[in-house]
Length: 176
Image: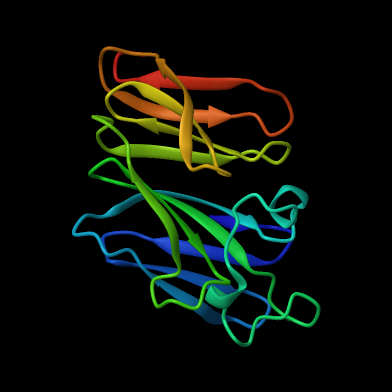
């Protein structure tokens, strides 16, 4: 997941870790531990400096923030990373949390199957995910709960695209 505004790259795969890279300094600035025995199938990241994150999208006690985090003089812009996994789990990782995993919340989506895509919205505090079982879910990140589910296919879903500026999504399946 590439974040243009901060020069951050978030990478994951068939590993129990997610790595956050600051490309300006060409160094790994954080490693999240997923705590799952399954691969990361999709990630979407968002800079914490974005407006709906700084207005308290998720209430995290300041005692859980890293000791060296200071929003005024932090050279690397912290991120929130939304990860989807092969077992249907969706997790949020907050770079400001001091715990080793950095995991703010993890939710197992009911019978969703392999999560194939995740997109953050720039204008709303939501993440849109799609699973191979044909469902598209809209998550309110303030509560980390699903507020809308669309059953778009009865057959395996293979692709999801979300427009950055207007509320349009496109999906694809094996038969298309």
